Every structure is written in C-alpha cells, then in structure tokens.
Image (cartoon, rainbow, N blue to C red; front, side, top):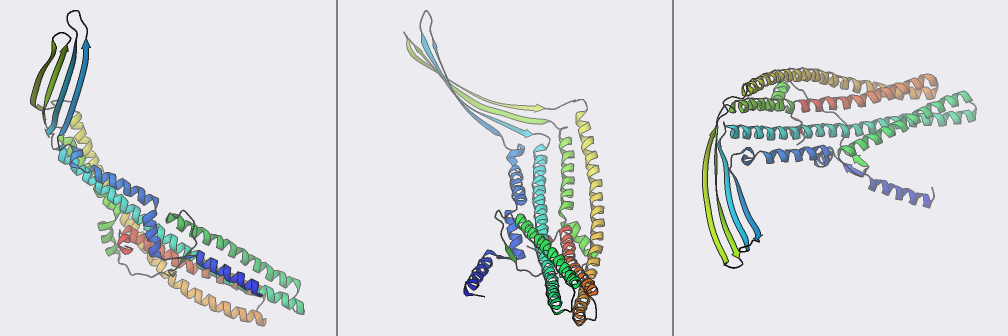
Length: 429
C-alpha cells in the first residue's frame, strides 16, 4: 500500500468514526419520550383536560356583564330643532344558586376526564418505551446477524480462493471451483440482504426517536437477555394495580356513575338570582332653548325558583338508560379483567418457554461452532467432501441466527410482561 492510499484510508476511517454517534438504550428512550410526535400530541390533549377541570367551567361562579351605551340623534321639526344624546352604563349579575347538585357532579366528571387523559398519556408513554426498546434491540439483532453472515462469507471466500489455488496446482477441477464460487456468491448475497435489514432497523429507530435527519448511530449496549424469575401471582397483582388499560376502564365506570347522578339531578328544582344596576344620562340641546340634562338610575335583584313538573317521561328514561349503561360498564370491567388475566397467563407461559429455548439455543450454538471448526479441519484434510462441508456451514448459520432470535424473543416477552403489568415506566424511569 503506497502513501497516498494510506492517507486516503486514514481520512475515510476518521470520517466514518466521526459520522457514527454512540447511543445507549437510555439515550434512545430519552429521545423517543422527548420528541415522539404521539407523546407530544397526547400531552397537549392532557393540558386541555387540565384546563377544563375548573369550577368556573361547571357554573359554580356567577357571570358578571358590563355595558356602556351612547345613543345620538338630531330632530328637525316645525317648533324647535334639537339634538339628543343618551349615555348609559350598566352591570348585571347572573348566578345559579342551586341546580340539583349538577355543579358538583360536573366537577367530578371533569376530574375523571383529566385523570383519564393522564392515563392515556401514560399508555402512550408505555407504548413508546416498549417500541423504542424493541427497535433498539432489533438494530443490535440485525447487526449480530450481519456479523454471522460476514463470518460465513469469509469462510466461503477463503474456500473459493483455496479452490482456485488448488486448481492451478491440478488438484481441483473446474467443477470444484464453481461449487466453491456458488457457495461464496450465495453467502455474499445473504450478507448484502442482511446489511439492508440492519440499515432498515436503524432507520426505524431513528423514526421512533423523531430524528428528522437520519443519523448513523453506534449502539453501545450489549445484545443480551437477562432472564428474571417471575411469579404469576405477583404479576397478576401488579397488573390489577398498575395496568393502564384496566385503570381506564375503572375511570370510565366512574364516569358512567357520574352520568347516573347527572340524570337524577334533573328531578331537582333550580334556583337563580338575577341582579344589576343601570344608569342613564340624557342630554337635549334645543336650537332656541339651549341645553338640558336628565339623569336616572335603576337597581334590581330577582330570584327565580323553577321546577320541571313534567317532560313526557324524558327524565325518567334518561335515568334508566344511564343505569343500564352503568351495568354494562360493570360487565365490561369483568370482561377486561378476564381478558387481561388470560393474556397475562399466556404471555407468562410464553416467557417461560422462550427462556428455556434461549438456554437450548446457547447449547446448540456451542455444539454447532465446535462442529464447524472440526469440519473445516476435516475438509482441508480431505476427510469430508465439499457437499458435507457446505451442509455444515448452512446448519451453523441457521443455528447462529436462531440463537440471536432467541435472545430478542426473550427481550420481547419480558418487555411485554412489564407493559402488561404497568411497571415498564418504573423499570426504565
């Protein structure tokens, strides 16, 4: 290698080292939670729910109105022309003192809606954390698969080079060279396809972190699964206490109870107060007699008690419908609890199986790796033919890929358990 090539190689190495940015799983989660569009939208919706949860929004406080007026006219007649200016000012107060407890009922409703909005935000955060974790480890998975393909491709390339050398010495024929070449080209194709999978996985991670410019991150966390011994009873208790979907169902049930109370409040009378004051100043400017003023003021305060004696049975039907919907909500809670328990049990069993499969995958890979090394030595010594050696290569890459997928699958199941039990936020807080 001449000096110019060496300089170019160093420049390119420096460029790629600079282009890659290190990224930990914690950093990826922080970026996703900070910039993910879905979280931004749901947090803004939560702000709206918080603003609506206000006593003034449910009619607890009176409404006060102020008014100012200026009316001007000019009259032309046979006796005496004059200009009239009328100035007025007023203030009025409208206050519903009692309306069947609907103020308190509506305030409770807005409190539940605010809590529901917070739970929806938490659900979005949980989903984003789970998606970011799986996307992060998917990049690591595809990168490890790429290394496996690179290893196999290198072995096939070495075999292809050796076959050409042996053909030159007359120990190999064209058939052997073509077989080695086909194996190398097949592994080269697998490597290139896996390289695309790796780039796509990295692109998906950038998308989850809302990176507008695609960044070539270098993921620093190791690709490994840490099995945890869970107890199903503990997971079920955590799910009942923390699962956000189940908590939302409880909030919806309280909203249905609130709707029943709101329907019943229509059977109560309403008691209103209307009060205010107005003042006027009236000015007449006559062409012959000159200017004259007159002033007046008016104060008033009125109470109104009203009661809807009959409305065609609408109030009664509204209560009955609200009570039926409340009953339906209770059934739906039981249904959701049963579904979640069933899903959790299935997921737990799946987790146990995947944990065992990971142990088997490690043992299988060790055996396949040893078999690969021994087969290479036997092939080079002529103890086995190229067909047998190729079969062992294919078996090795298949087992190696399955071992990587077993790691990812266990991470997937563990993350799903944390999500279902509502503890994923605390785990990665």
